[in-house]
Image (cartoon, rainbow, N blue to C red):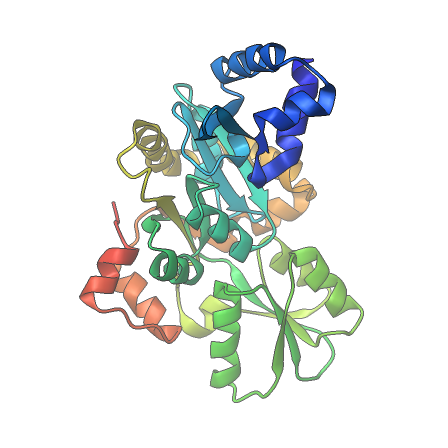
Length: 325
């Protein structure tokens, strides 16, 4: 019975489900459902919030729009830029860490801004835009530098990229630099983008590691750092509701310490990334050093990178976007 109820709560996703709906769904008594829900709350599986009178809406911890004591929900993209996040995830013992994988920087950062994640790693430019619009997240640290480039297929003027990402903005910089004309199509995942390149639906794509190194076996590539110099790619941001939370302080301490362990635990990380992202180990090995991993993000560098993307922040907006360690 408990498993059936928990399955329905998870199935409800971000919308959650009313307690009364669970009673009607299985024709259980109100007292039976209440007892099961109390047990699930004690086990840290669900969040229950009173919405009106005696009515309650229930979410699984992973889909809760609120922080959950003792839990930390982290989102990362399907890229190899996050070894420190993965080590912190493995090494946190005091709290329950939930790791969620995303294909899209836009979707990840939107979930973070709307409260469905507590911490997220996505492009600097994406997090900055959401921080300005939503005012519910701030950037706390770096993740890595570089790691992206352009893959060229057949000559033409149609380019592929992920939306509102470092890849898209660097692609536009490259097109301006080379005085290239063309249109940019957005793709929801790297796999869809690669297929479009292979089918000739686009003529070039802006993509990140480990896909960039893999595609270099077949196509001509140009790395963005070779043209523009080093740049911060993804950054780590947190919900403003979590900045002073004990759960986040514990994770952030593990995260900072993890950067010194990346080289020593390289094999462990490669195996984990291969398993999580369903990418062959050999491809991850070859691309592992396509990024420079560092949590330090000088404010001046972050601001100059944003200016290169056409976004200049005044002092007030800087404080809205950054709370750097």
